Image (cartoon, rainbow, N blue to C red; front, top):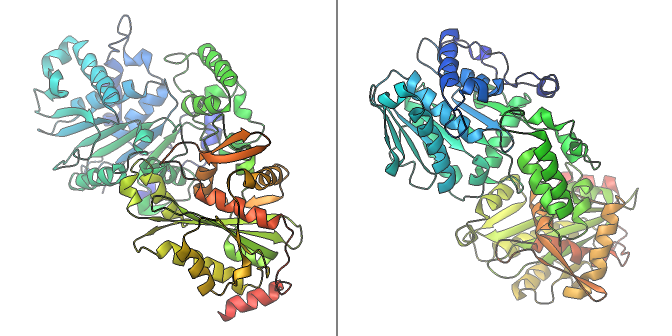
Length: 571
């Protein structure tokens, strides 16, 4: 495969320093100079079809775009192997993503001397696909030489090279696009939207697999950040690219070249929100001064602030690539503002049981369309802080019933916080197993140990009793306005830092789905949207908080840390 793999190291651990210095985000690679220069020269000559005077890409595109062209099309070695086979570019909105995608597609066609090759440009929606086709075909029609070389069939969004017979097909991404496809090149625009499509990961995987027979094939993924917490194929590809960029993923798995215009995680999550400083914005806007104007962004930013946190979060995700940790809608639960700050990385149920002097359990769920959520809430020996660990179960058929959240549910399963159930009682058995583990730790109080919805499924109560719990340990927790004190207690303890949780993406999602309604002197927590917005594990936490408010004591005084560890080892 040509040059040594060591020469094709895609990691760029100094990416933040490079960004601050105005340098490109692509590490030094042993590119073929002749190929690279030819690709850039072709790209530079293409003309913008929708701007007065049709300026060439030499003027309209920034150097960052030429760096991508050079890396992608200049990485083929003498043996015909393309070393940059996959490239993920994440850049904020209005930085000419779709225009660059069309230009790169036309450049790839012109670079390829092999006959009868097939290239694809996929848009996640019909409108985005049409925009991509308009840009690619418009660039051809703006140049007399290219106009004579290519045949454009607008009704089927097909561009054919009359010299080589190769084609560029522009279409909407759907389940059928992978059927029989052996592509030479694939460009996917706005990957983040596909993160919400339940079949996207499977289809994209099939397309990637279909390229294995072509050693010089490539896949280019272009996107902005998602306007919701990343999910599905977008989350998978973004996590992979970040791992490669930071040097955490190496070897044969490091096949994606990451070009990610984003701020460091600590800048994005800082409660003081330093990303609001407009002096930082140019760092993530590589096309600033061309397709992006700072003064117009500032106007939109001010407008977003006036509309509230939800609109500000959406705007920042699209224009600054700020990753949304949870949906901060206008009717959100107030605890959502402090939820992310309450995460304790690495906290597990075993850790909680070791560190706490007493623990209680909250459970919520019911219908086959719901999550069954359980939350174990403990009081830490040394600090008195409350520690929370959550798990959930859902019937596998919900993946088909709620396809809009299926990618997200699969992500939670992969992270180990959600179980997809095949058996009718698997969720009840799972909850009972958690309860039994806490019971055996000796941390449950003799009374008021497990809080349940009064309408809890009868089989759940039977399973808990079967796990060894006594009737007096099970408590029916009033719902609706009766949960008000737990809602207020949780948000206050999150704000003062005395409620810590395991930081799972699943709970982040549930918290973001919660809608708070003030009715008289009470607060009701409901779902933000019917069907897709699940909050059952959060309600399980509130049920547990109701019990912890009573300042419970473990039935036998609790086990010491040494006794608990000894018991764990013996088991």
